[in-house]
Figure 1 (cartoon, one colour):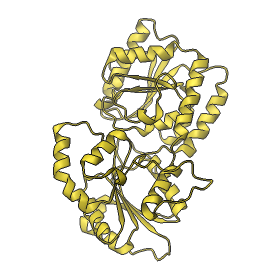
Figure 2 (cartoon, rainbow, N blue to C red):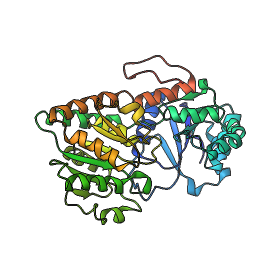
Figure 3 (cartoon, rainbow, N blue to C red):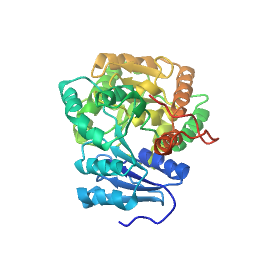
Figure 4 (tube, one colour):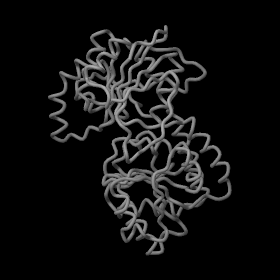
Length: 380
């Protein structure tokens, strides 16, 4: 595609699987930087078939239609000031990033993989350093464990930023404000889990744990609702615990369908055994829900304070999960409301506006704060 003939700066985003929260961040960057964005994306994930709409100044390119050389030509044609690349799994993306860096662009690798110290990560760190150095100036990661990985990949602390993921706070915070107002007197006694039905998300364990609480008369009047789809949907739904009368499987919900569902539920639970971050945690914190998160959920470092807005439990441990669920079941509505308010406070602390400020700072250097900015970017 030929270059757009404008005086606006150009940003190239080379992404894998898009979600609405990514677009919320890119939309803010378009406005804050007065920029045009060229976005290359992988096909939509069948297990998360989001209906996406794009800002008029975001030009979308389908990765499946582009050769590696075509993406490099996209760099030469548009001469972006900033290139943001999702990981290093796509060889064509790496070639394009290296070409952009050679032409003087600021190139950024986005990472959400947590450092866990196993042999494969040590091997990646040893093998990938040189090619990452050729392609990228900076690493933009989600949290502390990801920053640890970036350091082992050869990025100095000065070239690492945190906070790469943000929920669409402009969408979720107003929902939370309304729900907290409506729940002044009563709080809904329903756990909500929103996740793809794949082995690492832990829906089967969650259903088993909650069904046992119900059968032992330890669940009070609480219910468990699960939203999402995936390879294990029918397996979990038709399992003995999955068929429990107080458990509902709702299937995949588009973002616009979630508001009604959120109004019916009073606590969010994510029982993943592997969850390097989890933007869904930020989303539900913004809606004013108490949180129950497994020890594998990375986003807990920003959005959960033990005992203040929820509880953590040991990933994969049914008894630990049941203990955490009992704590909320035994909480009064006033205590649940206080947790909800604290969740919202934590959710407000990061946003697409702050994300866009970080991107702009990477592109052109530190910027003065404005009334629109919520806080300066976190520098690591």
